[in-house]
Image (cartoon, rainbow, N blue to C red; front, top):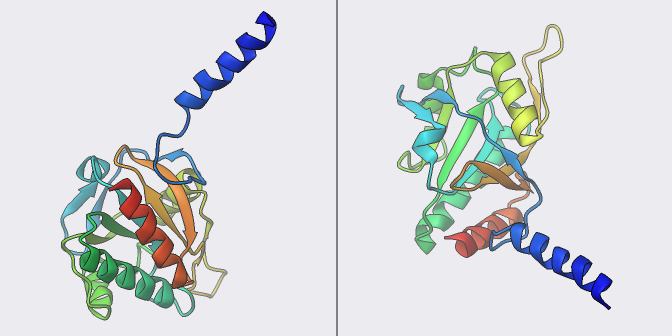
Length: 190
């Protein structure tokens, strides 16, 4: 009988040390320190987001396919958060930093009635930096355009990031129904 108590006790100890979030998580990746430039030409760093839940995605402004619905969906999420008084930050990382200057990002965002109080569009790095940042820490594909093309290939997920900078969950960012799921998860963790 005693030999069964040790494995059972070990199971409960390990279970207690596991995921402490109020939601079912699908990821566990740590976001490294960063400092990038926002649409207002201000700096945004991981330290600025510390202590807050945030939702991230990867887009670019001259995208001809998925970025428009992704940005529309993020704007819809922002509206729902405001209606429900849910506090969280939204961060859209440009995957085309050579084209997407702060001015271009701000102009792009104005098409979606963005409230910049809790949504930042960021640039201010080179392509290889954002490609590695996206792939390594968000498990999100970013691939340079083919020769003669201007369309960056990238993943379409939205990512929920904890106040400690841990990416804990991904969602399909193209399907608007998933904004309800993100909102429900934000309610549970706020």
